[in-house]
Figure 1 (spheres, rainbow, N blue to C red):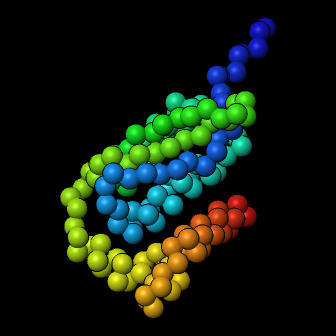
Figure 2 (tube, rainbow, N blue to C red):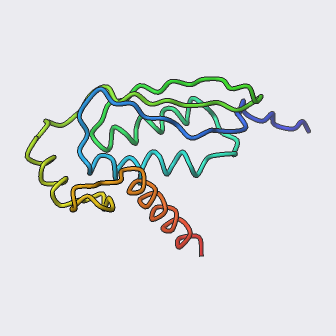
Length: 140
């Protein structure tokens, strides 16, 4: 009896960067954080099939309504790759009134936004903390 060879997996993933060629709603940013970004973070330091990972990321962005190109880069650490996502098109019509509504209602819950002094980094860090807390609650 021979052992079944293991598939050609890559051992690690670094967080991916996102660059957009299109305007994003705040709700898009929330959906990216809760969907593809969360998915990628859950797969950090785990073995995976790069082609499957790229397809999964593309499908998750497509579900949000965004068409993307995923670039894969090698790193100096053997078996570790870096991913960059370019949002190239919106799959739904753009509505500037939706953007205004989302900003005025501070759906990203950015501290200081309503006082005219938004702290985007702090707001996104808080959003990431909330997403990690959801993961933690689901594991119990």
